[in-house]
Image (cartoon, rainbow, N blue to C red):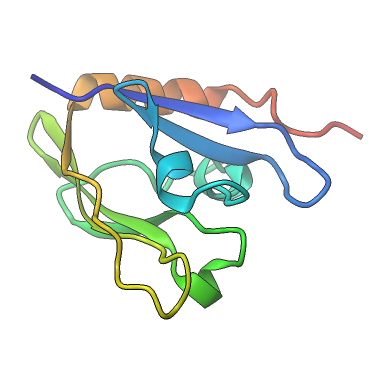
Amino acid sequence: MFDHLEIGVLPPGPRFAAQVRFRVNGEDVVGEAVREGGRGPYAADVLPAGRPSPLRATDEARRLELGEPECTGGCCGFLTVVVQRFGEIVQWSDWEMPRESPLDPDPYPLPEFHFDASQYDAELARAEADRSWQVRP
């Protein structure tokens, strides 16, 4: 059975530009990992206009930054994952999690997720096409 991905964009706020949240099987992956006050990646970075999203899965594994805690990733680390396509499966694995403080041990990592590549590609295409989060002058 495959995991199910939903990509959402939070509107810009007083501190941050519009940011992306990832729901896997209905759970907010970023919110769980970076805790209250943390943020996901900026929408302009992962859903760029005029070029492919770095979220696109290829047969070459690459590490992507999906979030950071309120104190910033430079302090306590970033939420990152390795994304790779294996035929008709997209895998998210090898999570790196932010710590609550530099003195705390690493928290328990998230599990591997396996998405049906067609559902993953369709959800990413939908998110790339939806530009409603952009602030218009």
